[in-house]
Length: 150
Image (cartoon, rainbow, N blue to C red; front, side, top):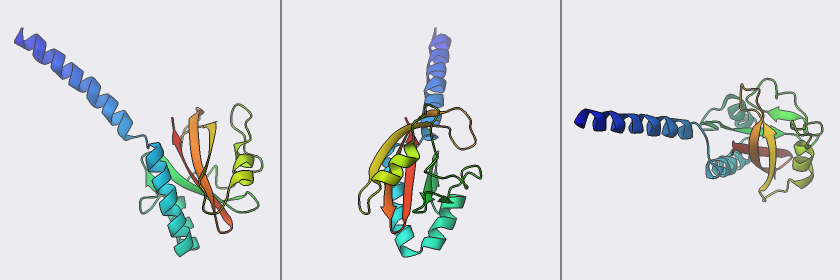
């Protein structure tokens, strides 16, 4: 009987451990907002150095599945850790449902205010669109954001 109880406990811990490990790989809404706030400070301090950090996910600008992206006033990407997105343009970005989330960012970004937009987008290195929400803001001439998966 003790063996069965020990086995059941181990199985339960194993399942719980797997769920915890999966949760540890996913950044939260609070993590995303905090990273965006840090990104704003970094851009204001030294734009070129900040953009380099965002591209390489250095100095905490890549945490779990979170990362910073920035686009210029024309909508063209100036920093994204994905080579495929490094040449993206907010004017033409659509999710798998046809939502023009890039245009929402261009239209609604305001200095000193954090806005948000929901859309479907794959994780870095992935192809399957997943429910995502991005916080974004205007920082000087740039529009920067951090998204998290729901």
